[in-house]
Amino acid sequence: MQIGLIGSGNMARAMARGWGESVLCTDSGSGSAQALVDELGGERVAGNRELAERADLIVLCHKPYHLDAVAEELSGLATPVASVLGATSTTALQAAYPQSQVFALMPNTAVEVRQGVVVYAEREPDPNFALDRELERQVLALFGRLGKVVTVPERLLATATAISGVGPAYQALLAEAQVDAAVRKGLGSQLAAELVTATMSGSAALIEAKGYDTLAVRREVTSPGGSTARGLEALEAAGVRAAFQDAIEAVVSPPGSR
Image (cartoon, rainbow, N blue to C red; front, side, top):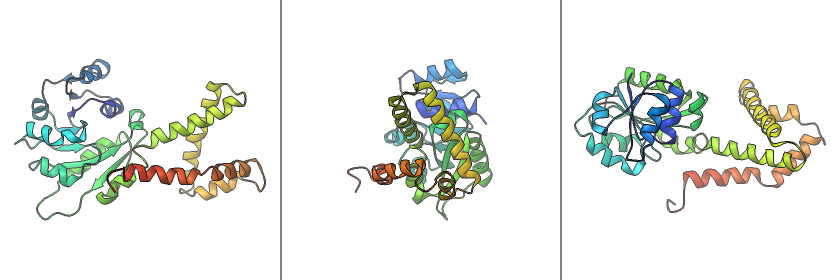
């Protein structure tokens, strides 16, 4: 399947690195498409319409507010469209691309190392639209090469991506905070970073192995009155749960949308 990327920013580059194969790509004049081609191969195409005519699947990686303008460039074409645009529903995509099969997905940047999470919006039944299930299977298999694909009802896409889409930034912040704390106690920053990231990776695998029973994992580490119990108490007192609740509210319901 020949992939065509409209927009060549951070997410496009992460996906292209994860797929590890030549892509067609465009940009709006930033030079990012040529940089992507120089790194990974493929071809910077002069315009979006030419890209759409040559690709088997268009992946929309541009800014969400460019949806209508880009769609107008591709008017009349029926090339399938996969979108990784934030806050853009399949209803909006279908309205913009009425002749195409459209798919709304939200990956995170860990797709670069094929350890990403890709949230797929399952569209509501529509008597006026026949979804090509075989094409859907192919698109999900393509994104499945980048990590774990999770299907959610479209109404929950924003909430799901408020965890997974922004998750790498949150995890990086948690790692950074732990490294900084360890450095203040005398540990070298490189060693602290190795310890923190290896522990995060192993803990994620352990939680998954235990059927996502986070309480069981915590109980196995925490002895009554022990050091882990004291550390957890300090985190709770600092409001770690409230902080993450505030974060998800900020992402799902930004100022001005309430």
